[in-house]
Length: 56
Image 1 (tube, rainbow, N blue to C red):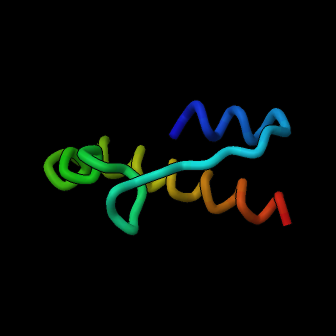
Image 2 (tube, rainbow, N blue to C red; image 1 turned 60 degrees about the vertical axis):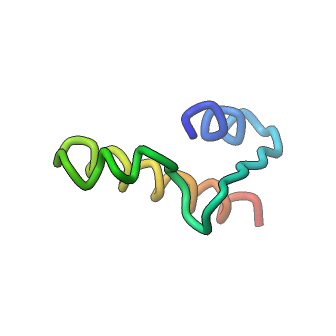
């Protein structure tokens, strides 16, 4: 997600592919067990949403 975020900020069109309908993969499990991971995942989700809005 960080590579996609940085690429989008630099003007590249990025595509993220996940097996499920949410971002994060196994990171979602890590976020469920440790608060710092949950905070980082929430930040990544917000950044991804912001990147999508800025493309429009």
